[in-house]
Each structure stands twice: as C-alpha cells, then as structure tokens.
Length: 486
Ligand SMILES: Nc1nc2c(ncn2[C@H]2C[C@H](O)[C@@H](COP(=O)(O)OP(=O)(O)OP(=O)(O)O)O2)c(=O)[nH]1
Ligand SMILES: [Mg+2]
Image 1 (cartoon, rainbow, N blue to C red):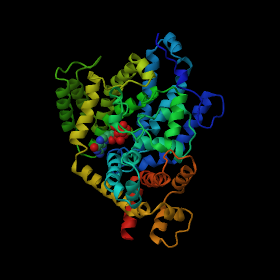
Image 2 (cartoon, rainbow, N blue to C red):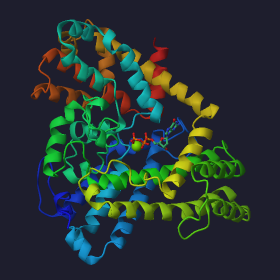
Image 3 (tube, protein in one colour):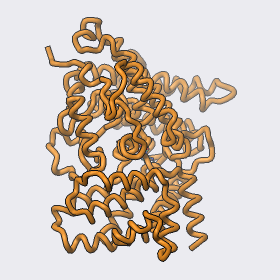
Image 4 (tube, helix red, strand yellow):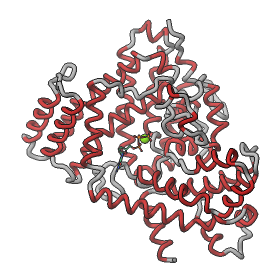
C-alpha cells in the first residue's frame, strides 16, 4: 500500500496561523482572493487578444472563471472514481469540500501574476532586461567589483520574469494574503528558484522545472510552505496538477471559439484544420472512448450547428465543448488516480493530460490549430508588436530610476529628491504598495550578501512589479501619457 495521506497536504497551516477549522480557513482564503485587486485586474488583461474591445472575447478573468469550472468538474470526477475504502486509505474521505475549494481558487488565481499583453508581455519584460540590465549604471559597477558567481544568479532571475512566480510574489510579498500554505501551493506549478538555470536541475524533473517557479524574495516563504506540506525539492503540490489540467482543457477550446468570434476563422475552415491536424497526430482515427471518431464527431457538431437559426457559431462551440470536455476531464481524473503516488509526491514529471494518449492528441490538436492559424493572424501580431513597444517603452521611460546609485535612490524614497525632478516624478507614479514591499524587504535579513546588489535587485523587482501589475489599457494609457510629455 503506498504511503499516501492527503491530510498532510491539506491543512490549516499558514504564515500567521489562526483558527482551527479547515473549512472556515478555506472560506477565508476564497474571500481574500475573490475580493482582491489582482483578480479584478484580470478583466483587462490579455488572454490571447491584446486590447480587445469585444467583451464576448475572453479576458484573463473570464478565462480563469472557466478554468475554475473545469477544475471543479475534475475534482468531482476524481472523487467519483475512488471507492469509499480508497478515499479512507488516502485520507481523502472528509476532504472533498476542501479539495474542491482549493482547486477552484487555485484556478481563479492561476494567471494573477501575468503582465499585460499576455505571453508577449512576459517576453517584452525579459527582452528589455536581457538587453539593458548590464548597461545600467549600478550593475556596471557591481560587475566590475563582484565575481560572476555572485552576480549571475541575480541577473538570471531578473531576465526571467514569469507570471507564475509573480503570482506567488503577489500572494506573499505584495498583498500578504496569509493564505493557507495548501491554497498557495495549489498554484505553484514550478518549484525551481529563478536564480537557478534549467541545466542545474535533474533530468527526471525537467518538466516540473521548465519555467521558473519563484523569486529570491519569496525564497524563505516557499521553503516554509514546502516544509510544512512535505514537498520535496523541485516537486509540486498534488492539487496543482488539477489546476494545470483545467487550464489546458479550458483554453484549448476557448482560444478557437474566440478566433471564430473575431472572424479570424470560419466554422468551415476551423473544422478542416482540426480534422487535418488530428489526422497527422493520430492517423488511425480510432473512435474516441464511448464516442464517434473525431472526424465524424466534428461533422455532426457542424451539421447540428447549421440547423440553429440564431447562432450557429455559438451552437457549434456548445456542442463541441460537451463532446470534448467530458472525455478530457475523465482522462485527467483517470491520470490523477492511476498515478496517485507520483501525483501525491508531486513528482509526476508531466501534465496530467500529456501522456501520448488519444486525449493528449485531442488537446494538442486544438492548441496546434491555434498556434498555426490564430496566434499568427496579422491583427493579433500587430497588436502584440504594440504590446512589445508599450512594455519596452515604459521600461525605457522608467530607466532613470534604475540608473541611480543606491544612496541617491534612497533619497528619493525618503522624499528628498528635489534636485532630481524627473526621477522624483517617476518614483511618485509607482504604486505605494510596491514601494512598501521594496522598503520592507530592505529592512529584513538579506539573502544576498552584497547590500548594493541586493538593493539594486529589489529596485529592478519594484519596476517589474509595477509594470506587470498594469492592465493592458492602463499600460497603453500610461505609455501615451509619458510619450506626450517627452
Ligand atoms: N496571442 C498568443 N497567445 C498565446 C500564444 N501562446 C499561447 N497563447 C495563449 C494560449 C492560452 O490561452 C494562454 C496560455 O497562457 P499562459 O501564459 O498561461 O501559458 P501556459 O499556461 O501554457 O504556461 P504557464 O502558465 O506559463 O506554464 O496563452 C502566442 O504565441 N500568442
Ligand atoms: Mg498559465
């Protein structure tokens, strides 16, 4: 019998403990997240289409609500799969409500740290830092005085901004939500510190560490969380697999629905692309467990939709979702229970639905069609180029703050920057919350021995906090404002 007890992974423990009732503790986690500004900001952040005005097209918020629904469905499906004696044996019997709540809120939170303009926003921040970090005056000085062993990890981290790591930073350092460790761990998809490169990680953990998981500023928080929940190095919390599967299942269909809504694809061309892509991945075109084969299923969905006089597009996706979500959710839950020990230990080195099965091919088909026929649409790419320009342009505008030496910057922080009119005004535009996090981190014990390097690192993080916290529209407006005043 494997040594699995989910009560070790789902508990009341949190940084500042209180209360003794798990359900109440999780209700409080829900309340804090649902009522938080980072969640509200998701309504104006890109899922796929930057600066989208059509509100029928998904934003990060509406996407996250759909992920929440799929996550909940997977939890129910897992519970349906387990017998009472298995639930008892794994410590899951009395935890169904807790698991459901943890997964739902993890799903709602999963993109909380994403910057404006989606993927290209992350990339734009990293491009700017990769290109300019070593040119900034304090960094130039540090590079001449310190060994590369000291500076390389910091440089690596600052050039790898990541939405997932930023979410953990929001939870702990920027908002101090004091969530249960179980809730926070459910969103922690990767547990590689951002100071480490991928080639420093064991090969059997390559998937679990493919992206950075957390920054140095959250290092001690993540260490406590991992200790508390008995998570081994580079391993995950079991519930994060469910959140990840829910995200994968949700967006693979939704991105295509949005593309049809935006008339990037018609139903006819979409159907053809889907058939062709699936045939390349699964040439034998076997029936999907308990259903028709994919081609026939698509034809049926398409024909049915044509009979709808009001909205064939809407009907097409309702039917397609019914046909696809059920098998994919079943598959995710089956993978969860079939690999229970590896999932419990957080060492399953892949996503639940990525197992080279027919279901994996289905999800891959949808994603591939989006990559080949949606993400490269000229309108999308033009908007993304604007996104790059806006993020890069904003960082360039704020660059004077990063070129100051520590003492001069500290003067501005203390309100003594009269002789630095531009820098002082730029500083005043930053969020007070972000500045407070910078000041608090400076007062606490530094995980980096050189105080100048640590201060400069925190200042870069402050700028990344500010830029990544913007919505698409705010970033655009801010860029226009600063450009006009140039
Ligand atoms: N416009 C556009 N959207 C993309 C591209 N690649 C992926 N997407 C969309 C597909 C999904 O709706 C969404 C997934 O975004 P995330 O940033 O959350 O990435 P994912 O969850 O796959 O990875 P991660 O959370 O970083 O492990 O972004 C792209 O090249 N262009
Ligand atoms: Mg994501």
